[in-house]
Length: 336
Ligand code: SF4
View 1 (cartoon, helix red, strand yellow):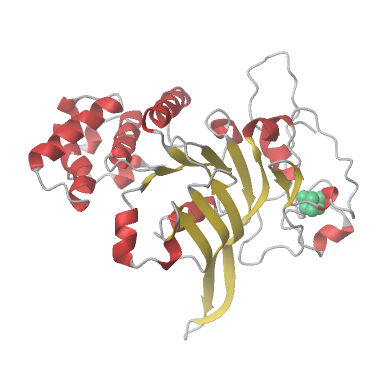
View 2: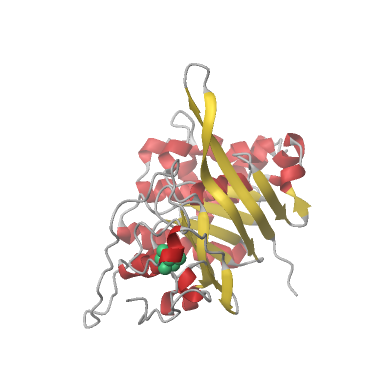
């Protein structure tokens, strides 16, 4: 059996809600609530959900940019949650992040050479000549050239800046890249270029990706497996092809119905979810999705559905598929 590169077990992040002059804790926002998954070497796991579902918080906890409230993160055989900050700094060369807004994450006063050279310096490459050589090498790898090293972030387009963000992530030869909405801020035509680049780099450097997005369409071609999150929990997890051909959770079905289909003869009815995502400080009882679900049953308002495996590698958290539910939900290629 293959040992996963990353294994996440029961990960939680609860933010305290404080009130009054004494800032007393009166409750918690469960931003991530008991999330477990694994990622194999060389694989891409897509994590999808609306904003506020906890996907970015999950990504940040893997690198301990945010400390988990509870749970275990095992990377390459090491329990990251038990490492000291010094030990964690060493691991950070193996796990890198690519952010949604490269402009915000690139220091506007520094040249690209300085920005890309910094991770090398932190990880012990003392020679300026060697750093420059690597910067030039990785600029070429992401489709830019050595002359770009002298420029500043504002002199690049959005797509070029994201290429620089990707180059920065590659500088320390990482094993895992966590890409948090890396193409959401880009035009659709540029999105495809950046996604293709990421796929090529994955093959060339044997990279493992966690690809976070709010749109199932974006992660479709890049992901081997996809997990769908809603209000801090994973509600469905499956291999990519299975998820798109046979989505089980009503929320996944609604998300998929909004993904455009390139075939003009294929008529697809979008499932419009009623209401907004509930306030995470005051979440619904039972199934968190019951306030918006077209299939809500009595049990859904009181009992939290647990993630259960329906088929090999395909898990869902929904009472429709339990003994209590109807289990006769019909879908046709992602459309109800
Ligand atoms: Fe809908 Fe009930 Fe399933 Fe939740 S458990 S998704 S409310 S049918």
